[in-house]
Structure formats: structure tokens, C-alpha cells
Image 1 (cartoon, rainbow, N blue to C red):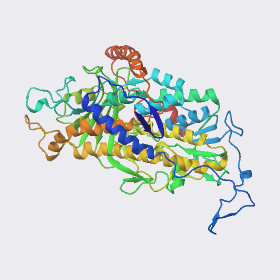
Image 2 (tube, one colour):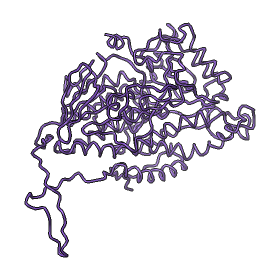
Image 3 (cartoon, rainbow, N blue to C red):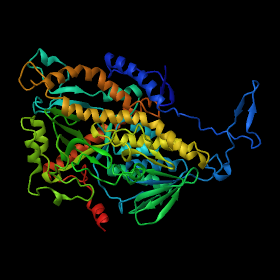
Image 4 (cartoon, rainbow, N blue to C red):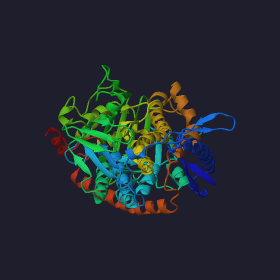
Amino acid sequence: PTLIWHGKRHYRPFHSNSSINCKMKLSLSCIAVLLAATSSSAFVPSHSRTSVVASPKTSALQMTDGEVAEITPEIDLSNYELLGRPARPGRPLKVAIAGGGVGGLTTALCMLKKGFDVTVYEKTAAFARFGGPIQFASNALSVIKEIDEVLFDRVMEKFTFTGTRACGIKDGLRADGSFRMTNDSLDYLWNPEAPADWFVKFPLKGCADLFGLPYTGVIDRPDLQEILIDECKKLKPDFIQNGNPVNGYVSKGKGNGVTVNLEDGSTAEADVLVGSDGIWSAVRGQMYGEKIKETSADGKRRQGCTYSGYTVFAGETVLKTDDYYDTGYKVYIGPKRYFVTSDVGDGRVQWYAFFALPPGTKKAPSGWGGSERTDQADPEENLVDYIKSLHEGWSDEIMHVLDSTPPESVEQRDLYDRSPELLRSWADGNVVCIGDAVHPMMPNLGQGGCQAIEDAFVLSETLEACKSTEKLEGALQDFYKKRIVRVSIVQFLSRLASDLIINAFDTPWSPHDDLGKSWKSYLTFFWKPVLQYAIFPAQFAYLYSYYPTGNMGDLPAALEAKWKKKHEEGAEAAFERVAEDGQQVAAPSFFKISETVLAAKKN
């Protein structure tokens, strides 16, 4: 069969896989065809980029019936410069990138490999190891491999697969505390002895196998940044300028580029400016007329972003549980909150506790924007005990994870996102925004970084097709049209996942106890088969449906086999170390910026 995914045809037959049951095969295949049709339309430009040059002596054409048809006036190309490629005459495209995070660095590498002249302007005075694990789903791994084989291999060396193991939703009240592995069937309805620990498992492996892609997993953000910086420096040693961020721009019209205003008062010239400077973006601030970090009185609006209604606490511990090698990540659901744990490699378990609390309900520092441990609301408060108090009556599995966590490692962040920009472009003249700078999203699907990487790839491919500076403004608008539908869907799904879990889910109903008796409990129970056989297969099939590499054949299985032994060796060494020396404060943690970066900011 021929599948068209985002404008790419793949003539590859589907192969049967024993890990996908018949029901999943049928649902995923139908979903794939439907999503292919809708997704590809998002990547069809609304107009041709082919220019017509008419003779200056010809302004009209006489038709046989006496009517006169106007001909497109001549375009004077003498005012524009040719943009070269190895097999095409002209100079390199000059690109300035605001922000040296994952999106900015990936964009830089992708463009440098295409021969562009790229400079990244990063606010920190020097890169240091900060930030916790970042999830890369199968779609992002496909893009990374398409960008650069060496980059992909180096990422795999530091990668921890989660999608190869059981991942899904557990009952936060009924999980028996032993971290046992059970199925997610409905046996417990008629058998009171049947375990009801798992509510629904996610079809991550089945959906990845459907497209022949590597499995979802995590990599430490510092490792990823070091790899990206190193690969960029191989192509342009001075590609990054630290300590002098972009704070504005002047787009000078078609073919005339953009003047980039820097914090120290200096300027730089470029053909294109890419705003990849995060959720509180200075580039977006100017583009949309927003004041940087301006916050409403109630805290629910901040620089055009909306408070999600949730705050998240995060921590990390080294902990060997009975299911450590069998599970990737688990979402414990219960009344008004949920608790997530994930294996992030080397025996570490990262956890996140989501609560529906007003914005500014601060207990712990975020580590972002210069906050430090001394900024804790009550420096003497044991934050682990506080979080445990909010999970009273929940499974001992959660309590065991929390009891193993050093209290001083706990951090907190209010979650903001944005509505999709369906009515205004991400581009303004010769300036464009990507990633969190224009479409921040809730972390539930782990797609924030993945979509930024997709942005980087699609933007680079779109600009590569430009043969002169006259085409750049139109190319940036084409990029927006190519990306807006898919990104909006992912934003919607990410927000829906949060809202459903907290506002519509509860402990599922069971005939054998009184733990779930609210109307939400009955609704959650009836959601189970719909989620299991329709919604989750559709969701993950859509997320993975962008895969520019095509089917990778036997490579995903080979990568998993190679990783499994290394993962166990690293974890066992960490477990032995903790047994001898005890738990230590995790570094880098999920939010914390290292002292090096904080010192650089203060200076």
C-alpha cells in the first residue's frame, strides 16, 4: 500500500508483528489511513512559489473574444541575492537563532549541515550541565536520524528506552504497594482476587512497530546539549555567542533581511531570524506585541500564555523496585491529582506530582530564572512530607518513591501553555518563531521537545528550497502553513490529557470495594475500553505519523537489544552505590539551573 505522511510517500507494506494483537492492527491501520489524509493536507502550500517573469514590453494579451487578460508584471531580481548550495551558485543563507536550547541547537545543526551560515545567540554566559531528562518519542527519533546519522548514534549511546516496557495508567489507590506486574484486563469485575493495579497500558511499542521506528525514551538534557554543540562546532567552531541574547529585531522587507538587536546594545545582520528563545520569548513578544513576562493580577495570564490550572512538583531518586526493569513510566490516577514515575537511566526514577492549585502557590523553588533553594517559601518545611500529605490514602508505591527522595531535591513549577495560533502566523517578514517560543504545550505527552525538533527539520527543508532572498518571506509563511495543523492537534491532545486526568478521571468503579463511587468513578470505568482500543491507539499513531526516515526495519529491535544489557549494568552499579553511600541530591534535576549558570547571570 502507498501511505502519504505529511507530503512524503512511503511504498512499504505493513509487516505483522506478534506484539500487536488483531484489534490493535485493525484500529491502527484504519487510523493511519485517516490521519494520513488529514495530515498531508497540512503540508500543502496555499500557493505556488514559482515566480513568473514577463517581458517589460508586454502588459496585456488580446484574447480571441476581444477580452484582455493581464499578465503578471515583471519581477526585478536585481534587488535580490542568489542563495547558493553546493550545486547551485550564490552565497550561503545567513541565519540568526535566538536561544540555545534543544530547539535552537537542533535548528542550528540542521541548517549548518545544509551549508547555511548560522549564529546562535544564547543568554547564558556559558553552557553548564543543567536540566533533567527530556523525552524523545518515536517521531522525534526519526527526525534526528534524518538530520544526521552521527547525531542519532550519539543520542542512542546516552538514551534510556521506556517505550519497550510497560507504560500506562495505574490505579493510585488500588495498586497494592508491591510494584507487581499485572495485566490491564477487566477480570477483576467478576473475580475479586484479580488484581486491579493497572487501569490501561499505552500501545507505545505497538505504534512504533507499526511504522518501524525506534522506541520512545529519555536522554539527559545536558548530554543532548553537549552532543548538539559538539556536532555544530565541527561545522562552524564559533557558531554560538553566549551571554548576549536577542531582545528585538527590525525586519527590513522582502529580500533585505533583518537587523537583530542584542542585549548589550549591539546589532547583527541576517537574512532570517529564528526565535527559539522559550516560552517567555523576546522575539514573540515583539512579533505579537506582548510585554516580556507581564502577568495579570490573578496570575492566570502571563505574556499571552494561560495558566493551565496545575502546578507540578518534581524530584529524583535512585531506587530499585520489583518492576524497575519491566516498566518505563507509570501514571497513578486518583481524586484531583496524579503522580508520574519514569525510569531515566542509571537506576534513577524521576517523579512528578501534579496538583490543581492556584498560580503562585509556591512551596519549592523552580530553579528557573535565578531562583535558588533559599527561595523556598518555608526553608524548614520538608517538601516530601508535604507532598505525601496530599496523597493520603494513596498506594504505598507512591509513598515508597517519596520516602526515598532527598527533600532538598524537590522543585516546583507552575505550568503555562498557549492556545494554537490559528489566526496569526508564526512569521513576521524575515522573522519566525519555533518550539516553545510559539507553541508551548503541557508535558503529558512528552511532545514539547519533539515538536521543536520537527519544526527545526521542516524549517530547514523549506528554506533550503529558496534560490534567492526574494523567496524568504514567502518560505517562512509556507513553513507556518506546513506546521500549524499538526502542532495545534498535539497542543490540544497534550492539554486534553491533563484536563481529563484531573477534572474527569477518578478512581475507577469496582464492584468489590468502595474506593470509587462518584459519578467520575463510573465515567472512568466506562472510559477504559474506549481508551484502550480507540483513543490511545489513535493518539500515538498520530504522534508517530511524521517519520521522514521511513520504516527502519530491524534497527529498532537491534537498538533495544544493545541497550538492555548496558542499562542493567548501569542501574545495578547505581543501586550498589546507594546501598553503600545513601541517597544524594540529584544533579542535574528536572528544573534546577546549575550554580555556574546562576553565577553567570548574576555577573
